[in-house]
Image (tube, rainbow, N blue to C red; front, top):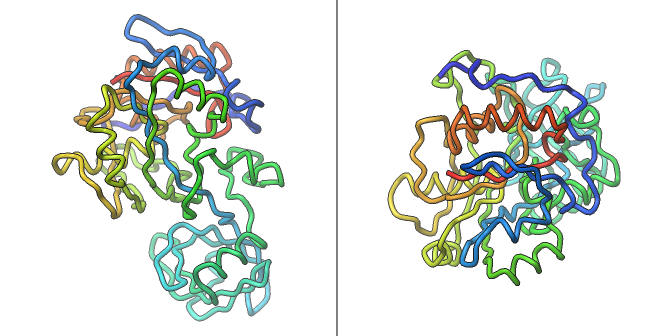
Length: 337
């Protein structure tokens, strides 16, 4: 499909720079079969049914943006993308042109690395001087929250350490938050449980590719980044017992549908590079709670596949007209398949 089909006018001042407080006070556009309704996230228990199952992504955002210096002199900035194992990380770095294999890098927090390789796509492989817990400890001390560039130019502060982390964050590994989960509070979770709505989790470590624009004219030419994920057996069992599956965010949806396209739902661990566009056959997910995404993005293509392109064009036009807040710290919508 032509990428132009997924374009729309988005005033820059609608891209949220901070979340609302409390989190469940954010606005929710209920995209129902019979029309659009303006609601609040706190009303979610009344919009769902007893026996529904909410699926959350329990990944945890790491402080993946690093500032340091090259051994030959000069400032360097690195954004970790994916853990390759044994202390090696696929990364974006700038200025990339000045880097060559073998260069030593010194980052804040005492973390050191060597450029192990440069890739044709502009990424680099960094080999760090420590692994495991000691690496994460140094990263916590010297790294910064990897905000997307649309939020304050990507510059995070102390507030973002908590603002850009969901209530469900357990497993270190993401460089972007599963942002639909940011709307949930302990009070909302209690109300959902009292309404007979169950919850379960999956893990998908969100990569920096989520920041990357689609630079081709046709969706068939776009290459998705791979992300590591896991679906535990307990979640498979919960899905089998559920009346409806409600994914909280596109990351959990992508993971479940990636597993289900190869056969029945099962416990699974691995990498997925699934790219969902209109025409995709959904097998598991019945409802989707998701934030408002950017024009021409793979995520807007996904919601158009899930709820229908014309319906989403109408919903987004309504959201812009009613000044809903877009992107990671913004408002959300509830979609039916």
